[in-house]
Picture 1 (tube, rainbow, N blue to C red):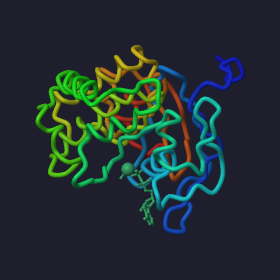
Picture 2 (spheres, helix red, strand yellow):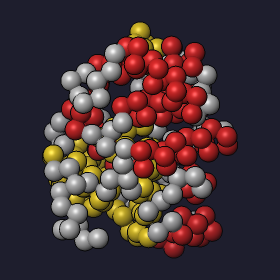
Picture 3 (cartoon, protein in one colour):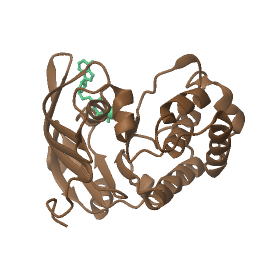
Picture 4 (cartoon, protein in one colour):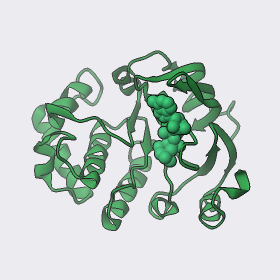
Length: 250
Ligand SMILES: Nc1ncnc2c1ncn2[C@@H]1O[C@H](COP(=O)(O)OP(=O)(O)OP(=O)(O)O)[C@@H](O)[C@H]1O
Ligand SMILES: [Mg+2]
């Protein structure tokens, strides 16, 4: 489908440039993720993948200097992270922030209040319980302060519960597979795949490994090198990269 016929619906990134620590890391990124689509970004260490995730969700310290980030025609550049979440874009970051003293259930109740998915505390707890079961997460883990004293894999699964409860239009996942054991990886990937149909979740998944894509079916794979998308293709591109590495792009 041409972008014109899709109208304004989608997560649309155009000409995105961003700097970190006064140094330009992203040199003009174009990406479009439609509802229910799964796009994957792969690339060598230090190529700017996390900087892309940080730019999309407005993480302080990452400066967007040019370009557009739109969700269904709402421009997100300049908005705070919670406003972007309200507009429909949330992220699972490579290094989540620990928030001592705050419980996930209260974060979810306030994040959903005033939206068309407003839930009571009871409703949030029920939803969290169901979602934890779907990905094999011990429900007691959800009673701990946000991201405090969680193992790497527990933290990623905790974030998956947040996504499933919040039901954003689009999510950015920065290495959600890192730290997950093989069973957890399969459950998280298949929960994401189900979400693409259930509420049309559009996924932008950053990963180093093709195994994430066994259960989660990619529509497109993009290769990022030195802050640019240098190649895009179908899921077979992820398989190819497993064999070739990034030398052909150096
Ligand atoms: N606070 C900072 N100050 C200066 N440079 C930074 C800062 N944070 C990141 N960078 C640099 O920006 C570049 C891109 O980093 P980024 O974390 O986006 O890479 P990545 O593709 O996610 O890598 P990985 O695969 O290792 O996660 C790197 O060269 C990194 O050293
Ligand atoms: Mg990274």
